[in-house]
Amino acid sequence: MSSLQEILNEKTFPAGILIDMYHTLVYEKGGYGNASVYVADFLGVPYREYQKARVRTYQAARRGAYPNALARAKAILANLHLNASDRYAELMVRLEIKCRIDNLEVYSDCERVLKELKNRRIKLALVSNATPEWRTIFEHSGISHLFDRLIFSFEIGAVKPDPPIYLHALEELKCLSSQCFFIGDGADQEIEGAHSVGLVSVLLSRQSPSSDQQTQQPHADYQISSLDEFLLLIDQ
Image (cartoon, rainbow, N blue to C red; front, side):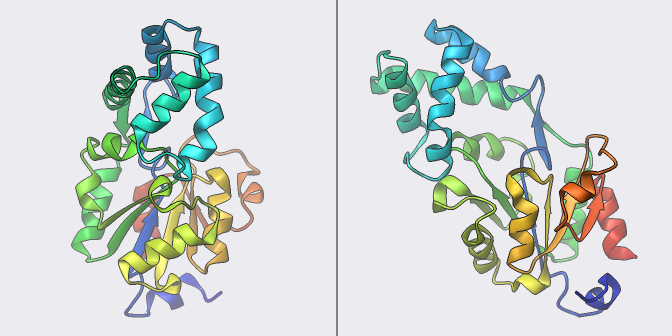
């Protein structure tokens, strides 16, 4: 690969940036399972039993097996041998989405950096492995409007690190992979996937990265600890 400075000297670079969502842009206060505590209580089942039923539907849900959050909720209810009526499932979905929105936090550097990238006319695509409820949740984050495209795995039937999800995002942005960065926290081997399609990959390690984290992510072209560092990277 050419040096970053050589790449940045190209007038077309960066034309676009693909960005992961969870633990890159947003996180949940109290952790991912916090909302599940409330849902399990609403259903009147032990938390662990609810989580087991939820996990059983997870992989299929993020690959688009369920057309919407309601359909997934009905599958979870059936798994728990509970009333799987539309009305009961709808109440369950509303509760989960409300809990997640109430607990959602956007990292402090996100809005500022995303606005700066938009001011530079760089195209932005969210690329997230997510289940159906997450489009609504992210749209309440306050930063979704800064993206040109929101690419969720459940909507296109492909997940990171598989090439189709990155290629779909590039097609939506009308950019070549050689013109774009991918930024993510490294979950789901997403850095390896980005590297495989020719994206310049950036590992964002917000949580006190261990000394061997770069070794654990051998395909990362660069490693940063904040989005502010990303601006410094492309301005060097």
